[in-house]
Image (tube, rainbow, N blue to C red):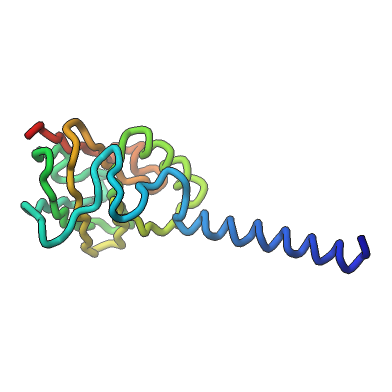
Length: 164
């Protein structure tokens, strides 16, 4: 291998690593909830035209959600209107306990990770967003704020999905 070829190979390898790292830090990481129309362990992204009802959830700086315990029926499509009434950034991530714990570890490494998944919303102070989700399976779906320190301070909740 010539010196030029060797140097070019190193540059390409470093660029590959840099690009894959920035994509990873940007929120495109393993353990996500799949494509927009795929069903997961917690359900699937909902269709706005098929929303059964809306539930407003407030996030605050006492590291709590209001409400933190939600009841829905299997098959229901819920529009979660999520409001950050605090003075720091918060998020709401729906998932299984295992998914949330895996994501928590990623957030510790990349605290500024941006989310583009339909089961997550990150909001600056005073902002509002929404998640539209169809709960296709009975059981419990967890939600949490995975900003560093928030989950540990108790910022979590659950959606109990009752059988049809």
